[in-house]
Image (spheres, rainbow, N blue to C red):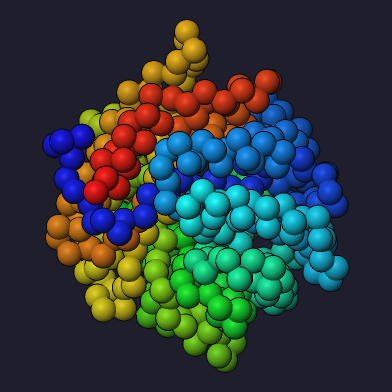
Amino acid sequence: MTDFPQLPSSFLWGVSTAAFQIEGSTTADGRGPSVWDTFTAIPGVIRDGHTAEDACDHYRRWEEDVSLMAELGLTGYRFSIAWPRIQPYGKGEVNAKGLAFYDRLVDGLLARGIEPVPTLFHWDLPQALEDEGGWLQRDTAHRFGEYAAIVGDALGDRVTSWITLNEPFVHMAWGYALGVHAPGRLLLLDALPVAHHQLLGHGLAAAALRERGATQIMVSNNCTPVRPASDSAADRAAADAYDTLHNRLFNDPLLLGRYPDLSAYGTDLDGVVKDGDLALISAPLDALGVNYYNPTEIVAPAADLGLPFEESRIEGVPRTAFDWPVVPDGLRELLAGLRARYGDALPPLYITENGCSSADEVVGGRVHDPERIAYLDGHLRAIAAAIGEGADVRGYFAWTLLDNFEWAEGYHQRFGLVHVDHETQARTPKASFAWYRDLITAHRAP
């Protein structure tokens, strides 16, 4: 680690997880069904019919997992709270047993010197709210604000850093527009109200958390540097349209108090946005969470596909087991682009997800994953370079601690620093676990 650039002494070292992907115990202690429980029960939508009924059994094995975090030397842990555990029907009665689980988890983290950083919504909307229209309905934003107040009352005496939403673009696009994630709706551009209602929910939740003592509130946006496949006017226009939808639709309202021009899509949000909404959404953030996996290359569509862009394959770079391109410098490029676009409106940044899947196997009690080590090393060096260029990056949360339920891929994609045998639930730290531990140790040493 002697050649690794030194990151700030106050840098937060963490990992990220999501409730539905690791907790299991989907009907335990009064938990209600989420849209993902309903979606995974549909034949054919999840690879090989996998379900998250057991996932990583974190609901029962959380103490073992916190011990692994302590062994890593983490100073922060980003996890999500399952709304259906707190309010099984998305509103009304509070499930005390569900709250008690997160109460124990927070205390366990603090006892190990690990800062809890909860995310309130990581895609597992209570099914009862989806039955009433889900995020297409403005009322869901208000229910989200009420849920935030409940969780804030329960944990706000010990938790000061919060993330309201995880990747609202992905939830809108994959869940409501394209139908490949829960709730499985295929609405294309008619899904756009989902963007505004999630952001309105953020504004309401942030206000509720502020009232309960929160000192740091973030949104974790999935951001990507967008590149035209050529310098042609058509490709540049297509790339701009994609950048508007993926990045600016969710960052501009938060940081600038306005939506970007959506004329490339022949639509707008004028009928959805009400007076006062944008003021609520753009109340100052303490930080912005950035989830980064790869850049996106865009070409003009070859035919009328209903969208003004088409994604192109980035060639000449390594690829993960998920077939995603590995471009560490894309993270530096992204951070520089955010600074250029938002200037003084950009708050401090945390990389709240970054990681790769690889075909990991336990051989002789060990897991050798050099691809993941190279991935983490490259991206952390890119962060160091970005800081050297002036980016205010305060921390890094690797995705993810455990091999988990990877949404529509089931258990086929392994992103974890810890290998999980999904039949026995045995945990085996990988070589990347030791690498990350040693890097943290080198940075935390006096």
